[in-house]
Length: 369
Image 1 (tube, rainbow, N blue to C red):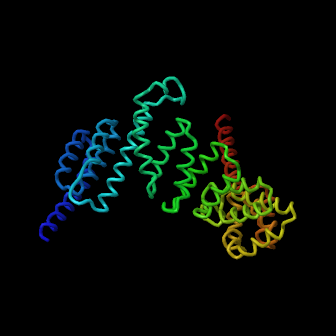
Image 2: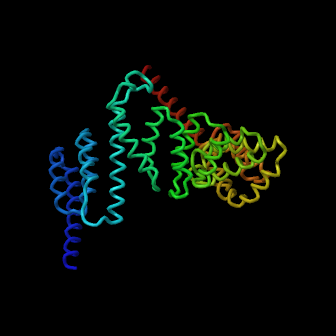
Image 3: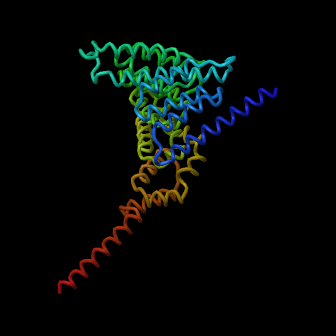
């Protein structure tokens, strides 16, 4: 028991020295790369529990300083490191180090690859292909295991696209997005959608990918693209879905004053009205009415909109008209601003600028006289 406590205290003490020491070195103006290397080498022998972690951090430091070969050597050492019975934490760390081994091979491959795939240079570059094989074997092994592997997936996809293996790339992205054993990850659906869009997949596939993203992150910026795709199908059910998606988006604080989102909603409502589907708009509005009145159409919000953006105020007014809501105060504010032509804030600024210009001209005239 005493031995275990001693090992634990040494491990904790070693980690404190490691964390504090690296912070101090980063903030010392005259510290050199050799100082870091010497410090990391000493730390590795201080406590075996942190050996792999220190090697990995040392690798990151070497990469930042452009020492890619030495970084690869450090990762190889960390990958082959063994000490005692392997715990779950050690197993996870080993998996992470294996992932970075593949990622480093990918970085070296990226440096050696030519700008154009399929060129003579690409065909004859054996060293480049060797690094591709090493990286692809490691990365394929890693990304097939449940986890969040975003940078490693993107690296592997980049290589597969360079060699024009679109089928393998699509299979990998679909497994990463749809495999139920993997943790929920919105980025996986973003990557899949971007890949499908780049390779001109049919709209149904694009919509399917974005629908899942909507269920995970209804405030994602790609929801505007989902609305656009649903609008183009010209199906009533898709238009109703687009209405719900756009209204979901505007219920998030980051989107409340976004002009594109409001214009998208207005476009959907007008299209439903044109198709004589007013009931769909009314049904959706009735569900959300109390929230939307307090969120978007209170009197002080109308006055605030009138000061900052006339265009936004008018679009919001038109949306309100489409719902059939009789909000007289908001309409009155919009009408007053519309007649004035410009927000009060802009008119005051212009008045001040005009007065200042007149004063300058008067002063200049006096001096000239």
